[in-house]
Length: 130
Picture 1 (cartoon, rainbow, N blue to C red):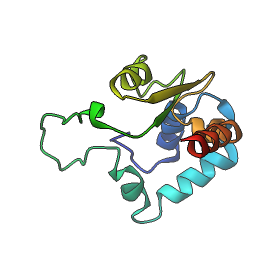
Picture 2 (cartoon, one colour; picture 1 turned 180 degrees about the vertical axis):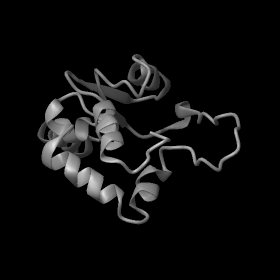
Picture 3 (tube, rainbow, N blue to C red; picture 1 turned 180 degrees about the horizontal axis):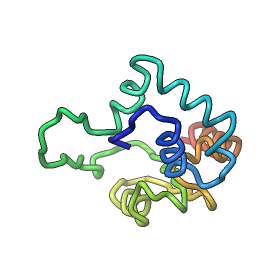
Picture 4 (cartoon, rainbow, N blue to C red; picture 1 turned 45 degrees about the vertical axis):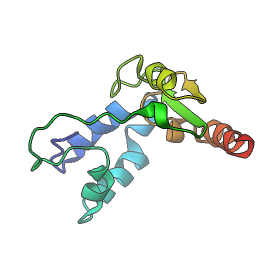
């Protein structure tokens, strides 16, 4: 992801990492994601919160003390997410008091897109009850 070269072929590789279901890796969705990535500033804005800047100096990653979180937390994760360690959601869950994990089967990194209706129902229920 850090080496995106603004080609449609590389965007296909990115979508292959993000999605389990092939319908999100080609066609209209690929064209939409590719076209939006070419708009000046869009790629940088979309990746700023998640990816390390190429100009950043190497440094030790700061890991927050998740045990200090005092509000309920819903962790949604894809069972087939190759961008995270397989036990990422469970480890995060065990480090946050009052956290709940919802794993999505046959799903990679983007449960909110691949299973949008189910995700929205779960999120709304969580928010309304917490």
